[in-house]
Amino acid sequence: MDDTNKEILRLLSEDGRMSFTEIGQKLGMSRVAVMKRVKKLEEDGVIRGYKAIIYDPDKVKMFIEIITVDDDYEDLLAYLNRTGYVTALYVLTGTNRIFATAVAPEVSELKYLARMVSNKFDDKIKSFSCHGVKEIVKDIDGGVDYDRAERERIKRNESLPK
Image (tube, rainbow, N blue to C red; front, side, top):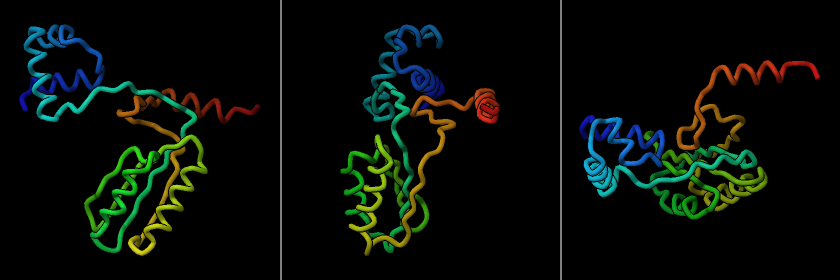
């Protein structure tokens, strides 16, 4: 991948609605040249889609880490993949590690998911841990960027007596 394509990807990752004309102006290229490059990046699977990032402060996020007893975990992956709560699913380096991100409107729904996975795959799971997200500091896929000044301001306000 050349530097021009990398720059196109950077611009689109910052603003997925940026027009080919705007990208071309920033890179000194024609709209058509940008369009051809973007189409090729889409065809090659580098650009997999465009989406609106919607912040929902009422949703609860949980991280799940599972270590299985052996490498026979396809049924577990398929189950996690089917659930509407799991938004990301990874097989990690190391021995038989699975990592998932789950999101739901209520903590009780995520507890239910954890119980179901733990019970259904009890014979395949060596270690199972879940952690609720207390605060999102940075999530480029979720539109949250680290802002130290804002975090310090919030901490100061939270520590003031009421």
